[in-house]
Length: 270
Image 1 (cartoon, rainbow, N blue to C red):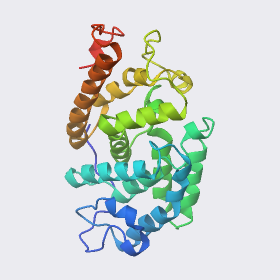
Image 2 (image 1 turned 90 degrees about the vertical axis):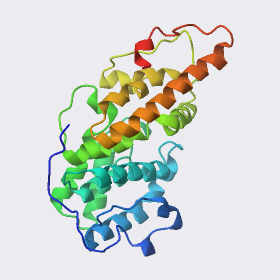
Image 3 (image 1 turned 45 degrees about the horizontal axis):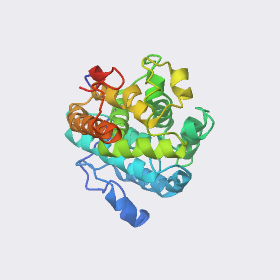
């Protein structure tokens, strides 16, 4: 997908991407852009990080603040290799706020996250155009919201989406899947319960299947859904790692009697 140019916040000035005086030590793990942001935009970012990180303490380990840090690092990696100009401030605001109130932890209410994000950004007097752009990103970027067809997108959204989906696959993706499965008290695997493919958004939200089914219902499907060349390259390696894990899981589960194709879905494990 061609990432079209939009308003550029890439600056050659020597401002840091955020002021370290505002950031606790654990945030030093966050990568920096090669082309730093203007001072005011850096200040928005640094103060927002300081103020919202505790909001994530209530979530499981797969959706805590470290998830935001990893998505940030993925996004910055993509931005640093991107040849087209995008609004980097919108991307980074979207990263920080994309899971501020994940609907799965709020009884499926998808309005809370965008509303909370809008309120937070307005408190820093961020311009309304950027505020509404970020709100749209948060509203539309999730995997489940793509199941019924894409209704809105932007060059900035697909970067946030790529960065977030990279954290859903590979070794971290495996860890997150089982972390959330444990949080929801789901079994690892049940040979009698086959994955359900081609789910609608509503069906996906209602899923209570074992964690291994999630690999077939989402994780192994993501590789071909990335937009940027950087994300596609990173996704390929992570996808292969997941395939190795799935094979090893069945080897250890079944011992010497592994079914050739436990679910009849080997076409998804390529």
